[in-house]
Image 1: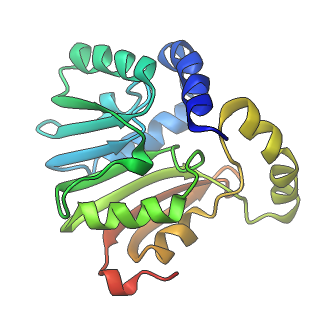
Image 2: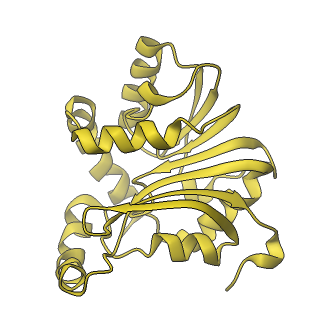
Length: 207
């Protein structure tokens, strides 16, 4: 999909994201995952700032999104919640940060939308400090055959409507990118993955 069309899709959804009351399970997963955030945090595709209520005190967040409408709402939420954050409006796949810039890298429900997810996952490995952590809450293809078949059949329609793929192999992407998964949990018929990972070396990434 053309990237500008994708931006327009997410701009149109900004009010919906901002007003949405999240499922209690999703709130619990965010809280569980983000309790491990420390120091200087890079958050991919911050959206309307759904993660901001769950960050520990003392973190500094660099929040990135390609949707100006989403960033506007995230800025308001950060101000309301007193989150120390700076905002960058750019396409995450074209972003460039210095190696080992961040203590924590966070992505929640964003890897469904990227054109080159493996390439971006490798960037996360580089941007994270060697002693830091990469925290992922992502949805993808289920390990259950019938559920996976339904996801594959619906994937083209849902991507056109919402800019969101249903068939990503999240843990496989992380391991191919050279990340060391130190904790993993799955929910909702294995469609949702919570991963904590450490950055490995470039030699450990697999093509």
